[in-house]
Length: 269
Image 1: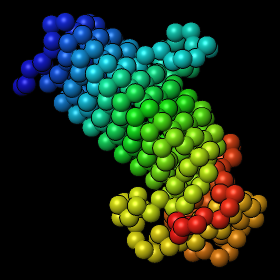
Image 2: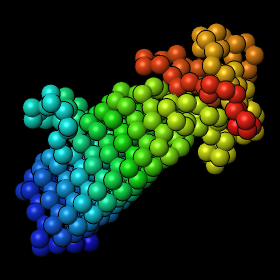
Image 3: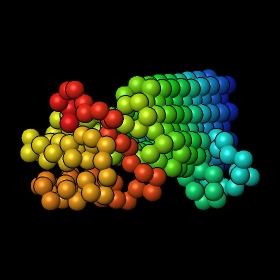
């Protein structure tokens, strides 16, 4: 059995449960009740709040804050949670706040990479293999699907959804839902299909072709989205990916990102 490596200056609550091989650096504070899984490293001066569960093989970086109280005037100290999966990299000075409603949670999946100074507000949810680059801000109740890539200094307004394999370019911002497979730029503007991401994820040429056909109709120009959805169903092979795209759009409550004002000059769509 491995023995925990806990620096003498760390402060760990009696009701915090740590796996035998957890590593805790200088000045770390771990409040309880909380639970830290095997192989997790918590570097100097990080803070782990109460009601936090952290899975196996995670890195919690220098000065990171995981599970502290939400920045919400309506929060009055109720029991709420932060749940972190396995094998995540949560780098220096990342902030992840716990849920704001009683019994609710902020969640990070597995194999995510949250780079320095990123922020996850209360009740936000990240899927698996999500990357949030330095300075990215994920608002309250935002849902980010698997393999999305949120570039540096991107802003995600509360309550929006980010579809699978979305790529947000640096400095982009959104207060509308971002459809799966899209490249997003400026203010929730679809600039094309995330071709690099699709190819890296193993999508076939046929799958990508169908997605691109759907995107040309939906986002190649600004048009009536209801009519565009019907046009896609009539003209594009209804692959599982296209069906998922249409379902995502129809389920939107905040509205969906728009196509560019002018047709794109490149071949992304």
